[in-house]
Length: 234
Image (cartoon, rainbow, N blue to C red; front, side, top):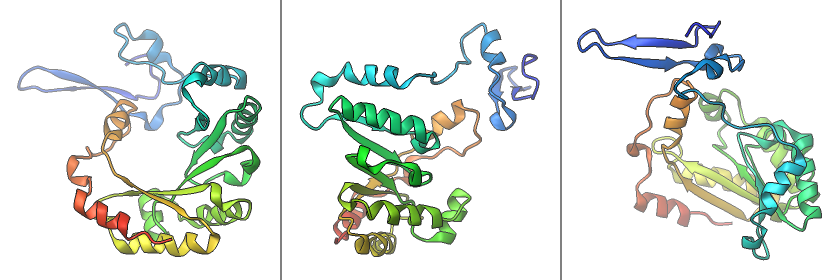
């Protein structure tokens, strides 16, 4: 606790049974990693590491024997286009090595993506409703939609739209149809619905992010999910 100058670590005690637990709140964390260096029990650790393009490709090539004719490398996240030069360099090197390439993106920063280096683009649309998008994510979807339009002008067949279905928010045919109204004029024919899962809640807690636990009740029912999938008509 004393190693952190910004008070990100706290001890919460239970006076009734004398127990205590360690809380990590990351709002003021500057990623100095001092807490990691002094933690005797290994409870604090750094997730991820820095790597060069060649190191990333070297790791990918270790499994090349299992890729078959179409397998390869997928840049996911977080958001890979927050590092556009690095992402494009990985894609180019992967193509030079005859690997299939894919980018998973939320649509922010794709104006810097070199489409010629991508075989597939998995494009996330949370909702086509701009106001709802701002309520859910803190920003509207104007940039996301405009970037999608620009990408589709190059090659819409590469683009796979994906949308997570969350109970009480996006589990409606209107949500599906509104997205279709956006992508159909662009010539995009791939549209996948993904069932929401709550697995991210444990990761959020580990990272010190304050989140309510997301239980199974958020996962859409199988029958409703099937009907939503059947409502897709492109």
